[in-house]
Image 1 (cartoon, helix red, strand yellow):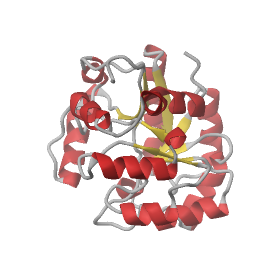
Image 2 (cartoon, helix red, strand yellow):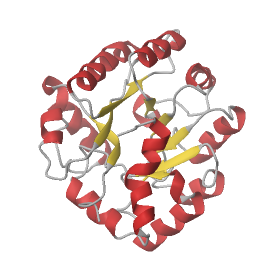
Image 3 (cartoon, helix red, strand yellow):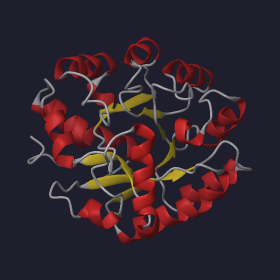
Image 4 (tube, helix red, strand yellow):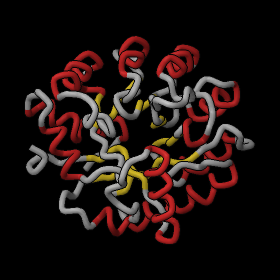
Amino acid sequence: MSEILPIIDAHVHIYPNRLAEKASHAVGVFYDIEMAHGGTVDELLSQPERMKHYVVHSVATVPKQVTSINDYIYEEMQAHPNFIGFAALHPDMENPEKEVERVINLGFRGIKLHPDFQEFDIDNEKAIEMYRAFAGKLPVLIHMGDPTRDFSRPEKLARVMDSIPELTVIGAHFAGYSRLEEAEKYLLGRDNLYIDTSSSLFRITPEEATRLIRKHGVKKTVFGSDYPMWSYSDELARVSKLLLTEEEFADIYYNNAAKLLKISE
């Protein structure tokens, strides 16, 4: 299926060459898994399963990293026209509105947050202020559902979305890969929520994944690989086992993300 349909990978981490090995290794240690790739752009583009577009981003673990990360992502966007940039922000940074305005002017299409790496509760006061800086302007891709910490619990995101209805969210990992019952209870079915398929299908059956997608809505589900965590061949094989029609696969692989991110080619 993936060989004949165009694909947008809506969840790709990239790192500068000098930092990639260390950054990828740190993620592997955090999740106690062996990373499939090293996280460089060259390795991403060398994969045989080439995507039509990649939504690329990185995470600012401290506020001072925000500008330099966004400058790096912008450079890669300029070098690779099929890269769609999502900007880093941090709830402890001063004046997030200024950085949001800058990245919008640079052509970024969204924001990327990882509450567990950045160590903030999704629904804390500073985070709420940060969301208001881009709500209604850019969607935000939020890592969801770590098992050992409470920062990214689905119930907390539900409170945020109730208080900021204009906020559009892509809930990574089915909006809570290790807390799927909570995600289903509080998040699935919301109009302003998309979910991505990344880092989840190794944990659940194709039947259960299909049920969750249908409950939330096929039109609000996008493909994500979570590069460099998994190999493309493995992730595409997992997605191909979903019990979907060809039209639904086309939506998840390409159409839904293209509409959300205003990709016209």
